[in-house]
Length: 141
Image (cartoon, rainbow, N blue to C red; front, side, top):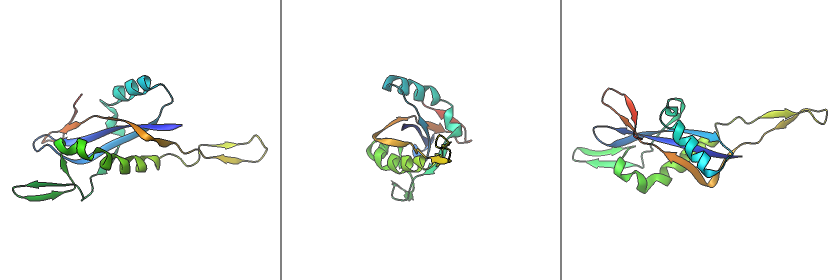
């Protein structure tokens, strides 16, 4: 069983800066076109249930007022996408239950612990979410 994910970088509407990423993993066993359409169908609203991840201090944005740590401009996201997403998907893998069931077929209880993982090339859909000055979130679809 392989994991797939929706990723929502939250973009400050005024500055274009990304300070945090929302992400949610799913276990979907289906052809790529079904996975893609499912993730895209979930993207407009499912970020409300996603986990939040702050960008680390290694991401910086230089302005005329100084250097801001823990953020990057939306125009730089594609350049650093894998550096941002890999630690997030590693944390998402840890969110799944360690015990999925109990096998009683032998007469003794045996824990069934299959922890789903992302593949070598994780299937991820990225949807930018704009955050207004009043905190309203609007997905860019």
